[in-house]
Length: 156
Image (cartoon, rainbow, N blue to C red):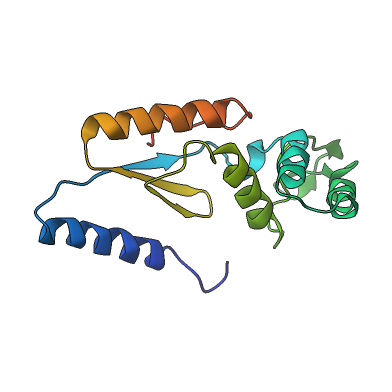
């Protein structure tokens, strides 16, 4: 979002660290990177998540219609490629895309959600033990994998 950054998320992370340091307790954090998060949202998963969150059917159909027959082109130098259909992901640059992504992540992770900070597609998992953090991470990864989202292990 123009004019917004990750400063708030960094501030919250830092304050959480300070709270644990003040109490002389350990805190483990795992910064999770999702591969091409907005590009990988399956349309059927978006519909499922909206219905699961009680979004009225008329709104689900309206959102679905935004994506029907979506096409794009690629610029190579001064030339544009032929149109091709985009069948996966939420629209890049749309003000609604972060909301759609948040709804999907909310529903996918509701059974594994605790010790989490989420800022758009950036996730931070927390635990008071390393083993607890490992367990939490693998549960999260499994939840994402089950709906077509991929954790980038190289950047996590």
